[in-house]
Image (cartoon, rainbow, N blue to C red):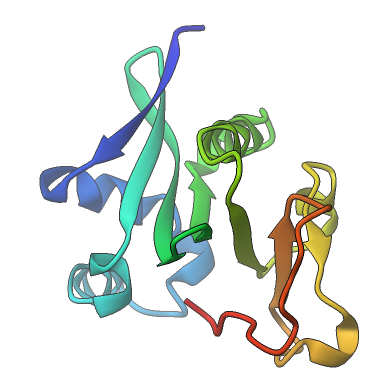
Length: 153
């Protein structure tokens, strides 16, 4: 397996958006979903990273610079036919290792155990603002200001 993690630019984004359509499409047609992604101010403010394996884009995520030493990680997705092979985990670990010394936050829309296995920690349940998405941080020894938690990014 030949793999690399690369930043992606605008002409590559439709393939990245497609990775999450089955999860985030919310009943929209594929064309409407793509248009929503293309015009998303949220997606335009971050930097997309992609894991390429044997020349194919298989996983992606977006990073947001929340403050000097704090990043937000969002929209981790893997192509449907490539799921369950560890590509998302591999990409996330590469992102974390490239950001040592920074605190990383993410919102888990899936079972948080996926992220716990990588080392993420759930914010105290009393401070979670949503039922269907859980705020988590990394590394586990990070000092977290619980009065200034990031909002959904």
